[in-house]
Length: 470
Image (cartoon, rainbow, N blue to C red; front, side, top):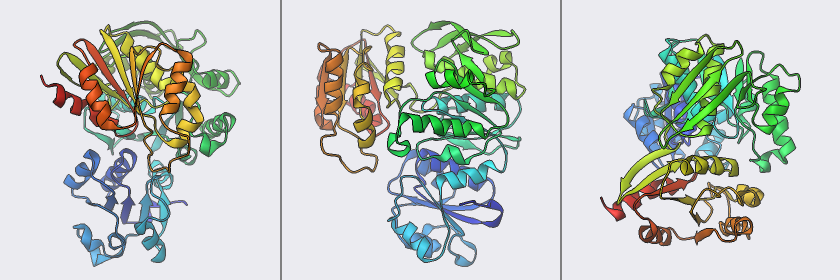
């Protein structure tokens, strides 16, 4: 459905505590709308919304829609919401969705409401299978520090501000464009970047070819800058297909070309040359060749919007990162803990390569598969993803709302890894307490313990730090 934000005042958000919907709720409130919402459980983002005075509550009840007074905020006339927006994770059978439909209240998707927000500003959308949150946050930082006062909506908490959204006074909105539920096909941005295209969400797109077609459709509607990574196989083909795209990457064919990467445990230094021959050295305070690519994409977009590469490099030298993207979580008993959102084969390989370059005594990787559909489709591709780990601990699948599938578990990844590396040290831990007890005995001073997941394994570092002590 097409949402006209000029015609609605009170918007109720079901599933408001997630990274994407909490950012949308923040922007809706900043644009003058009365925003209420609910979620199954609290979260850091949920508590920020509550502290900001939004009427958000834990739990789903029909009364949240039929009688907004129970939400603890003043609703003029006590009226029901004009519109209900729901997260992609909220099913049709949700009690609040059913109540809204019984009452004749329009129900829109995350894509619908995000598209409506994008129509309020000139939009630059950052899409791609991975790297989009970091790239979008880097671009927003560059534009903000350069005085352009952008708005942005990303799917993670930017460490500088502790939130994933800002509604600025400038003309540009930087938005993370998600392919998982087809959101990116509804946004109609003026400019766009695609960071990468790796096989994922095949339950939605049917095949890798279907996924490629969706990204091509996304870029076909962009009239301005179309920036793609030419190191990515799909991006390289798109850039050479005569579609007028601009390329970035390590390849000599790139318009914005990276070179001379020097990596450390906590950062990366590289060169970047633009299409006009202007070259700069970039000193990033976050590690990894993949973050160098993210930075190059952000700097190329900013250059297109009037911020020279040299200024972009100066600003990114102060980049604070995004929560759960190679995030240092602390140390205990000589062990360093890092948590990352990586959950696809290519992401796991890239993050482990970054960890390997840090010179740790050992890299102990703990990986939690995400979704039964993804695990069923991709488990074989994880076989060589853990090459740079000295020890791999694999858990069972984080369902993310999906129903279990017969024969689909984390044990599939154990088989896949051992098929490729028969002598690799691999542990299978379907029960979390067993995993915790084993790691407390296994970890040694000088180790890096790297948790990779898009689920609830992110709390494991704190549990291990508490068990290991100082």
